[in-house]
Each structure stands twice: as C-alpha cells, then as structure tokens.
Length: 310
Length: 310
Picture 1 (cartoon, rainbow over the protein chains, first blue to last red):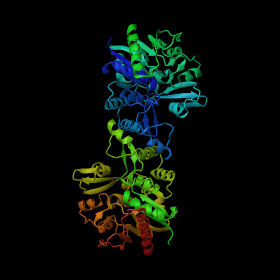
Picture 2: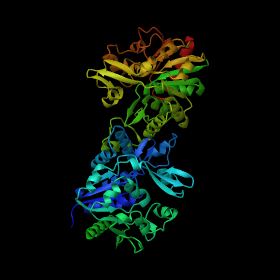
Picture 3: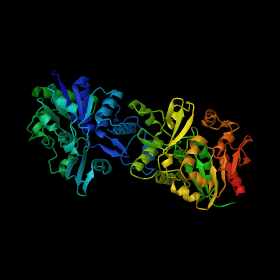
Picture 4: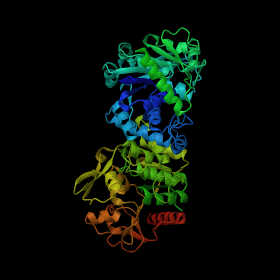
C-alpha cells in the first residue's frame, strides 16, 4: 500500500459517508478532510457551519442515521419554543446540535478561527481525523433564481430547493485565504491522493475549488486527484444535484459532474458506465453507500484506484 | 376600591410571586411591573435577563414550580452537551429557556430595545401584564468580596453566594436612562400605589432605585409607596438576603430591608412585629406565599393597605 496523506474534499451528507469510510481505512495522520463552508450562515444570531457539523457528527459516530444531518438522540424543545417567541423556525436546530452552534459562535466572537474551533470540537468529540474548513474567511454561496439572488440556506432549506437555479456565486471567495494547513499539506510533497467526495459539485466542491490558490494547488500537487461521481444511474443519491444540472442546462450525468473539474481529475469512480466524455480514467464500481461496509469498501476502491494512477 | 395604576418593583423569584398575585387581582392596564436588570449578563454569547425571564414565566404560568426559576416541562439536552464541547455549564439553561435567550440576543443585535423585546415576548406568551426593564441601558451588579470585585452571576450562581459580600456596585447605572414608560407612569398622575415586592433589597430593588431619576420619581409620585418585607421571622425566604445583611454589618431584620429605602416608604407590610425602627406605617400580615391563594391574598392586603395610606 502507498503511504502519504490523502486529502478529501467534502460537502455534507454524501461526502461525509466517504470521509467516514476513508477515516476507517487510513491512519488518522494520513487523512485530511477539507470541508466546504460556502453554505455556512448566520441564523438566530448563531454561526452555523452545516457541512463541518455533518462531517464532525458522522466522524464522531454522533450523526442521525435517519435524517443524515444533525445528531442522533436529539431533542427538539428549543425548536418547539423558538417559533412561539417569534423566532425563525424553518431551519431545524436540535437541542444538542444547538450547543455546538452556541459554543462556536461564542468562540468566533472571542477571536478564535473556524479551524481552531473545528479542531478543538473534533478532539472533544473523539474525532481523530483532521477536519478543516476550506478557509477561515467568510464565503457565502448564493443562488440566482428567476426571482433574483437569494442566500443558499434560504434556497436549500427554507424553500426546499424549489427555485430554479440559474446561476451560483460564492460571495467573498475572491478575498478568502485558503486554510494554511490545507495548502501546506497539498504542497508538502507527502501526498498520496486527493479524493473529491461524491458531493454536489455546484454547491459543495466548487466553492472549495474557488478559494484562491486551491485549484492550482490541486493541479500542481503531484498526486492523483480522483473524484467519485455524485450521480448514480442518472440520478442524484440525495439533494438537488440532478435538479441543478437540469436547470443549469447540463445533461444529468456523471460526466456533467466531472466536467466541473475535469482538468484536475486523473481518475473518476462511477457506478455505471454512463460517464462518456470524461477525460479522466474511469473506474467502475458500486458507489451507493448504504452500510458502513459500503463506505469502507468504496474508500478502499478509491484509494486503490488512485494508487494505480501514480 | 381605588383606581389607578399600580407600579410594582421586582427582582426574580420572591418578587414575581407578589407580581403574579397583583396581576390576578388587578385589571391588566392597572399594573406595571418594573424589573431589575442589574443581574442581566452575557453568557455563552447570549444576553440573559434572569429577573425579566422569571417574571415573564411566572406571569405566563410557564414557571418551574420546583426550582422557582426557568420553565416547567423543561429538557436539558443543550446543557448536557455544552460542557462536552468546552462551553461553560455552571449557569443552567434549559432547552426551552434557551430559545428566549437566543431570540432576545438576536433582536438586541438587530437594534430592538430590551423593553420592546420584553413586551413582544410577553404578548406572545399570553402575558397581559406590562413588564418593563428598569432601563434599556446596560447596568451590571458587581460584588466586592475579600478577593476583589466579581460579576454578580459569578457570585450568585457559579460561587453560589459563598463569597462574603463587602460592597455592591451597579456598573453603568449612573449613565442609564430610566425606561421612559416607567417614568411617564410614575409622573402621570394616575398612580394608585407603588409596591416594592419582597425581593432582595441589595441586588433586586436598589439597582432599580439607583437608576437616575427613578428614586426621585418615586418620592414625588404622590401615591403611597408600600414595601413588603423580604425577611420573615428574621430569615430570608429564599436567597442570600439574610447572609448579605449579616456580611454588610446590618441586623438581619425586616427593619434592615426597609432601611434601604425608608425615605420612600409610606407603609411596610411585615409578617411579624419585628420591624422596630421603621419610619413607615406598619401593617402586619402573613407574607409567606406558598399557594396561588397566598399570592392573591397578599396582593389584596398590600393594595388595601396602600389605599388606606392615601
């Protein structure tokens, strides 16, 4: 087996499944998970980082297996009450989950970086895998629909992805500084592979790639960049990936996903041989991750495939 | 029965009992409860107003009858989690209670005043009695013990009143502006009585009286000011009133409590005839409020006594 660090780029639910698989087949020091922060937002005065939180809970074994987001063994007293007080209740915040948002918000205001906070929270929850935000600076994904620009969580949660997506923007990204430890790892010469997890390309992976310097670092890192398709059999496993492709005028296909970062890819893991038009070398394997064994098996598949491309 | 508005000055638990009694024997328009905000504080990034909250919950029938503070039917998932994340867990915040702090903090940051927020929350929770903070400005009670000055909630909750109190200060009070509706009510000429509830004089009533203009408005309001002793049979019903009296070199007595605002009092309701040295006219009546009927009966007693002094 090859050695070296694997850097995984991930959004929330789908990406976190593979990140968990990778964390279980790699030594802790050999994995760095880079989390999208484009869907971070401020809500009820709290700083919420949905993708970091999903990754943290999944890696800690605290995730809710039914919803895919939030914590297991959750209670909802806060949520039941906030509406009665006139507060917004469209974004579901469980009582335990809320503790993370309150504590993170407090620490951000005290001057800690999101990286520091994420690292400390992971440590306290027993997560040995390193999880880092793509940047400690503020980036906010926005969606242009036929009614104009709206905030991402407004689109994603409040309006449940109903608006037709015409365009996406990552506000602030041009001024964002890539998280330094990520850059050091990518450029440090001890890289085994970069894995682009099966997350939504438009709202989970592209915000990461839009951080100045990150795309170039991936292109020049010297290790194979391998993506796993978020499209299986012409459909998104979860979320609005397929709907977005359609609305953005792209074929709903694994190839459309790869097309967003085709220039970076050495290899592409697809579930079915529907990836015509991808420049990268294809590897066909089951990519649906239902069980924990699925996650580990796909992680091993991706790593073995990446190693074969070196 | 006399008519006109009754203004009640109150801290938390003990004062709220009488405020509830008054709210049940007076038309809603005839009662204004002025809440101490000296023990407000910022905790976990949230703006917490313990006395306003206790009054709100008590008047809404949502109070926890066991603890005397917080809400009934409360859950504690947030509290169970915050400690594990490195957050402070010495101040107990229930999941439902938390919704109020989060929503208030959000609104304060959005520019609403504490008065506006308190009024709206009361309305939403079905409280028809007006509750107003003594001021919308920041006042913070501090305690000097043998180890120096500490914040009030540090003394009161975290250190459970263990430090010996040598001195009290109300930081910011000299610049605080009395809540305008309170001043308008006191000076509006339609006042029936002012009731000083059986709250701790040092930390609940004196911060209110220290707000510039409020003491003078009470002295000149033309209606009888009547206090109910927080000391019953030489002991405080709850909290550190007696301990503070002792530490501040005062006899532990109903007279010591009245002595803090003796100049204002037309009448003083005491439980036992131990109030020697009080200048105000005494009225002896049972002041322990255990049942709802006790609260109503004492409210009627106080109002009747006040009316007799007009």
